[in-house]
Image 1 (cartoon, rainbow, N blue to C red):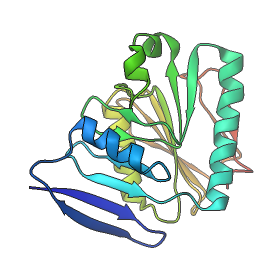
Image 2 (cartoon, one colour; image 1 turned 60 degrees about the vertical axis):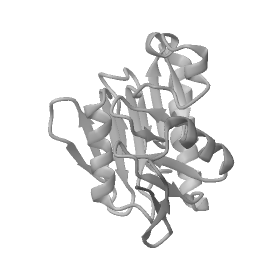
Image 3 (cartoon, one colour; image 1 turned 180 degrees about the vertical axis):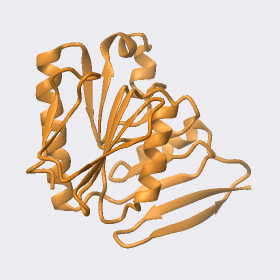
Length: 201
């Protein structure tokens, strides 16, 4: 068997297969990520490892703005914790994902052990944001958003900068599509959270 690496370049994904007796265990995947801290690395539910290069500068700025707005609301709301794009989470289906921004209810986070919190925590965030970059295909991101919802997220935003479109995902609903919105509201799942889009586009 082999471990398959899907390496995303700025223009196209590149798949590299590494000979192995079996796919990486969680511990081996964690060690692999530790040895490659400069990269964002995810793993699918089937064991495929996805290596993503550092974000381009303009994407990094927009990710920063996303996280900053979420942080301000999180501090004011006080019912949960926010996370930036460097945080990885192990979903119930076994995938390890790193959304561009995420939020988890405090009672769910506090139910984890300290050891679980210090690794790729075995929890799906309640809220996730994915910001499409130049190397992302829309179909792959849509599948990723659906995966979040199927694994326990109650709200997800897929922001497609290229087409100035926001896809809003909720449980048991078809995605809502917003064309060139001025701002996006997190109500009712995140009461009072609103993201102005001017610095995101």
